[in-house]
Length: 100
Image (cartoon, rainbow, N blue to C red; front, side):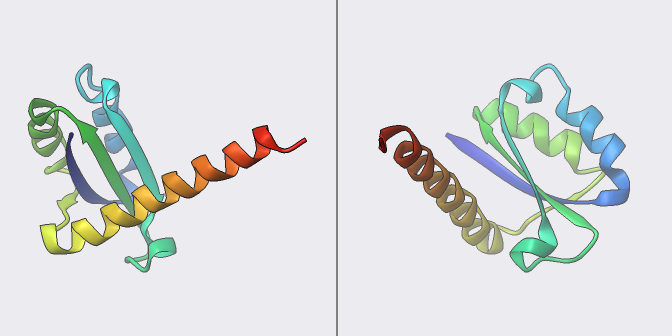
C-alpha cells in the first residue's frame, strides 16, 4: 500500500478538512496527529494517508497548496511511529475483549 505524509499548519485545518473530504481521499486511510506530541513543530498537524498509488498522487496535489510533504527520511520514522501506535492499540483492544 502506498502512503504519503504531510505537515499542515493548524490554522489551515478548514482547508485540510475540505481536501480530506475529496471523493478519492475520503476512501483512503487517514490519520491526523498533533505534530508537537511526536516531537514536531507546535501548531502543526501530521497527516498520514495510505491507499492506492493514484490516490496518493491526488493527495499530493490537494495537500501541497496547504502543507508540506515530509521528506522521505523523516517520513519513514514517523510512519513507523504511526504503525506502532496502531499495533499497540490493536493489542490493547485484544486484551480488553479476551480478559474475563
